[in-house]
Length: 78
Image 1 (spheres, rainbow, N blue to C red):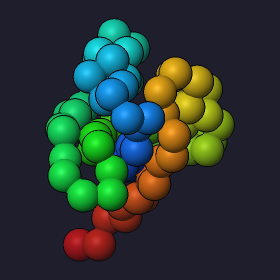
Image 2: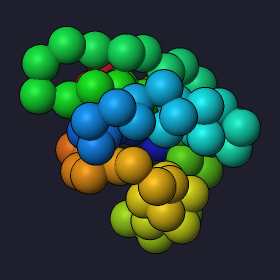
Image 3: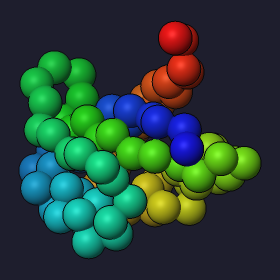
Image 4: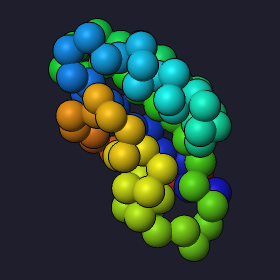
């Protein structure tokens, strides 16, 4: 499994609805409200061999209210 962190910027006034849609899809491990440039931060695991861009596109980016995302991929270092 590949661990990803995805920061999500929502249209003003839609963060709670976006978070509810993410929860309903059950694609996340953890989901947080954040301050700063992004409204939400999601931790998720993508199965090995799965195309990460396609997974994000098909499972997250079609949620109404998302303006922008920033994905951080993790690697096993030790």
